[in-house]
Length: 128
Image (tube, rainbow, N blue to C red):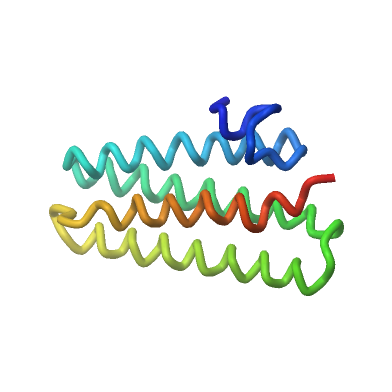
């Protein structure tokens, strides 16, 4: 696990399964950003991006099981944040598919930053 999400990392929720998923998503996001920056094959890149979105959606569903520990209005805001992030990634994926090259791959880096901010602002509320 990375130093961000391990047992003593600053962004741990205290739920080992959630933290492991955060670490995996963080790793996959960095991998995808490198593929985009290098201009790797777009078929391979879009496949990795689609897999990333699937992992993210699965993680969000898993994470939402923990909402019982949150106040209802916070749980709804968290769920809405998930919807916004998935929509943003799907729109990004659509823009990648529509072009043979991705001129502004930093758009994905910005999305990765949003995911990390989400973990900091929302997921840390899941701490027991």
